[in-house]
Image 1 (spheres, rainbow, N blue to C red):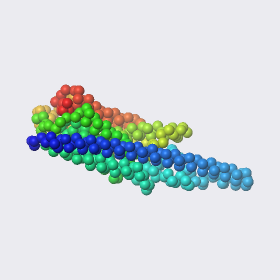
Image 2: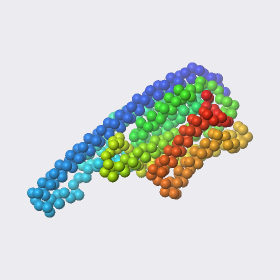
Image 3: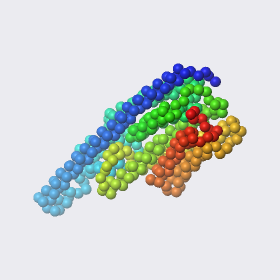
Image 4: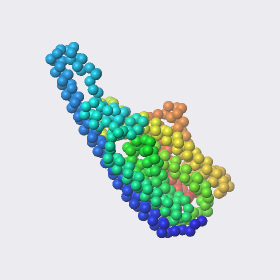
Length: 369
């Protein structure tokens, strides 16, 4: 066991504070991007409506001047079709004729591919998120050096490391998929985790209890943190899926679109499909978390399973996500039902790493509080 270095621990806390501040600015930039792009799309819709009204007026004049037969040909379906809010929710990068083309490509299409537009606020937000993640990584690393071990031996360290992994996974996925619309939600969750870690769960650097002094800590907890980060992404997508699904139904029924920023988000089906794929990967990771935890328990306490509260809730999370994957793949549980089941699974994850760690006594009570 390496000696404790309190100076490195203090540097770590400073890095965490700087990371939280950088994330806050990135959060504002992501929100600014949503607001600015939504305003632009509303302007495009207004121009499209004016153009459509002008075309109808021209067609009506032509019918009066030429006759019903010629007028019918003039008003045929060959006229340019303008993409309205409902279309944009289904095909966000579809180009419309005339002035509507100015608003095309503001976000990803159904496959969440990048458009060709230059969204300056979004690019600034991503750059700030990268900078924040770099500072955050420095905080996690210096915490590890300060403690002389891997930095996830208590609730403070788990939250700070978990927040970093969530942001890092988000930024890595951005390389292949345009998920900038998730930036506000992912960065917001990271800020909440850092604030909670600093305010409610702060723990000075120190050595681990004997049961945690094992190489299984690195294996078991690292996989748990990565799986939880992926579950965080799918939670955000499932929540947006519910909002987008309600919005699409409202617009399709002729109702007023009150959620302009959701025009930047792909349609509900695209969100659901990607969430399902990521949940499948995270579920595999959580399965290994459960298996390696049992192996570690046998080495530490001489039994694979003891119905400890933490063990039970880890298994509950596994069951919920297994049910989600099974129900969606074989029972046709799609749409809002699948989204709600994914959200329930993430709430179980949050309960497991907050309430269970803090208020339930057991062999896994290592919150450090």
